[in-house]
Length: 117
Image (cartoon, rainbow, N blue to C red; front, top):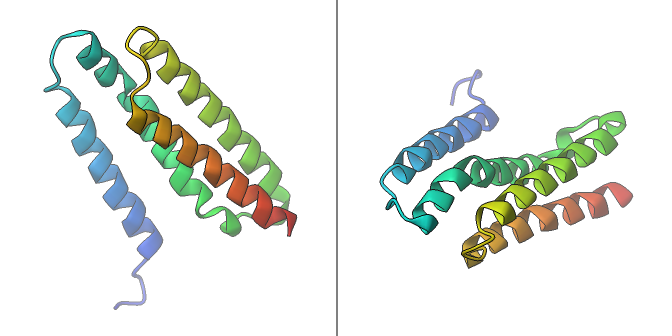
């Protein structure tokens, strides 16, 4: 391994590549109500995944940045959750999206517990 190797940057680069691939694959969804809702949900799905991943690195925040970081995470999760519920109001939120929202909220709770220690 070289001195300049940064696993953190590599991880985010790999995730970005997967998110781009995911967004491209959404173009092939059927042109029905569910397909359109799924296509429109891509930014919110990626946003929730990004917030969840970022919360996994919350310990890297300076102590005076932690409250703001958690507040931003909560706001983003609420925004993406609201958008998803709006997009799927007629079809109902798919179980995988409910799980994604739960994962993001669980990550917030884990960080809160870590910072309370």
